Image (tube, rainbow, N blue to C red):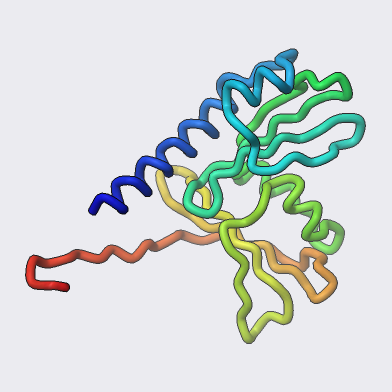
Length: 164
């Protein structure tokens, strides 16, 4: 039970950090201010003439916040990207795994199935009151060939007193 409470505490901390990043990282803030307020990003990427700080709640959370900095290290914009509007920007046949990870961060998990020859990237997100998954299907060359979405059904295990 203590392990479950500790894991829940970590999850809440990650969710609050990513939610705050969207609300609090304002244009003009310095990189140092962002990191001191929201902690170390899950990933830092070069972005054109600037840098992107990724604050991802994956694999357990359902958020991913991108904080884009200009060449001087000042915030240009901060936004939650695990949304239908953002997922709709993916261009089938053009985007690669690197493009998807740059825009959405690392996925919650990567699956393989017999009916598909490449990897399937899974992103956990929340939309219209429902827990969802967004799938990005890559071919053997890591180019996006299709996308899809569906509901995430979590397994609920009820433990009885007499269970060991």
